[in-house]
Structures are given as C-alpha cells and as structure tokens.
Amino acid sequence: MEIVLKNIGYQYKNKKILEKINLKIGPGKITGITGNNKTLLVEMINCLTVPNYGEIKIGQEIVTQQNRIEMRKKVCLVRQCPREQFFTDTVQEEMIFLVNRLGYQNENIAQKMLESLKLVGLSPKYLEKNLFKLSSGEQKLVQIAISLLYSPQIIIFDEPFVELDYTNKKKLTNLIKMLKDHYHKTIIISSNDSNLLYELTDDLVILKDSKIIAADSTEKIYQDIKFLLYNEIDIPNLVLFTHKAKQKKAKISYHRDLRDLIKDVYKHV
Picture 1: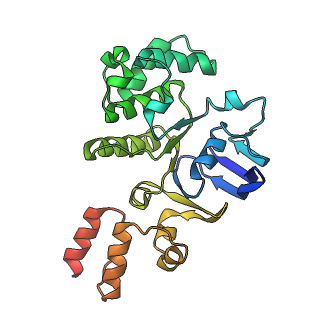
Picture 2: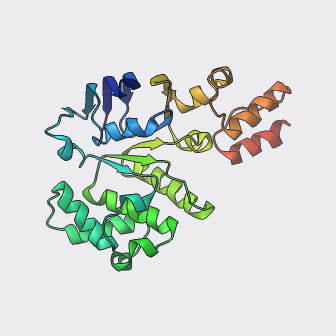
Picture 3: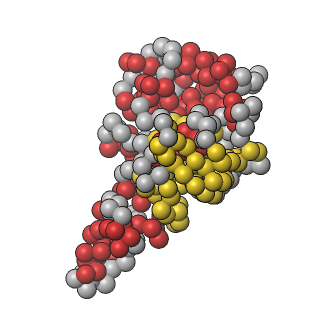
C-alpha cells in the first residue's frame, strides 16, 4: 500500500519541527527513516499525530480527523519499548483490548490470535503468559503478534532492535523480511542504526533540520560518501570498509551482506 505525504508541516510553540515534507513510500518495500524527528513523522503516518498542515494519503484515502481510527487498522506502529505499549497483564487480554479499542470485527478472532502468535514463532501457550514476565525478545515478538492481529497492510517499526540480543535480532530480521516477501506488507523502519538500515531497507529517507535532505534507494544514498560526510551521517560499517579499501586501490565492490564482501575480498585482495 502506497503512502503519500504532501507539504506536511508540524510546529510546537511556534518552533518548526517538520516543514514542507513531501514523500512517497512505495508499496511492498522496506523503507528506512532516519534523522531528526523520525518518530514524529512515523506517528503521523500511523495517524497518532495530526500535522498542522498538509495532506497524508494512505492507499486511496486521505487521512482526516473523522477516519483516523479506521485508518489505523491499515497502519500499525510497533514502538521501541514493548512495555510502553502494553495496557493489560496477559497476551490474550492485550489482544482483546486492541480489538475493542479499534472496533475490529472478526468472527474468528480466537483463531486470529493463534495465527498471529504462530506467524512470529510463538506457541498458543503464550496467550496465558504475563506480559511483564517475558524476556525482552519475547515481549518484542508478542508486541508484533498483537499488531498483526487485524492484518494491517503497513507496519512501522520504531528502533526495533533496541535491547535485543544477537539471536533475537536475527529472528526479528528474518520476520521483517518474511512480512515483506511472503505477505507483501509495506514496512517502515525508523532508526538511527545505519548498519541495520543498510542491510534491511530498499529505500531510505533522511531528515535533518526539520526537512527531508535525501529520499532514494538505500544503496545510492549510503554509497555517496561525500554526501554522508558533509551532512555528518553515520556511514555503515560495510560501506566504510569498502570505501577505505578502494582508496588503497583494492578492486572490490560495495556489498550489503558481509558474506558477499568477504568473498569479494578473498577474490581480489
């Protein structure tokens, strides 16, 4: 599902936070958003925050004050800290709470709960588990399962890997890729982790000083070293290594996968 922002602006106490934001996010892609006020921007896409001016179009519908709740059935926001998004004690209670809050009608809601858990790799026994006694990795997976309950077409992840260990990061990475490749979801990742964004995203949006300074393919932006240095943007480790190797006349190419880079190094260095 496509997302289009036209001339969006937001200010607080006469201070411009976002201004003249024009952006098109393509359907079925993973788009990264990084830089200043990235969370505010994704909250607008999730219809939680209303811009002072401009237009947001999700699919074929323009977001209005009257249809905001209905639009949030199409867009879900998975916040950085799962605990801040929980309102009840058990997984099942939290799922029911969300269903009631959004007015989601489904005769097979019990089956949908089980399917959502299965999708993120959790068994039915998690329905009865206390949310606040789960590990951070389990909480993140449950948080996503709850968000998937009403089959949103757009899923936003805000700093998804914070507090996760290596194993759970790999699980979440694979889950995000599956949601895109097999379920054709439009994914947005809001993060300042350049390594994560370089590995996972198709397109990238960079915010600075209240405006968008870049919106293009992830590879094109992150491989433009001069642009990154000029704007003081973190360079992904794989890009930085390759750039330094090229300066030493090494005949290697840019890669987004470490294994591919290693093969290239063995072949040419």
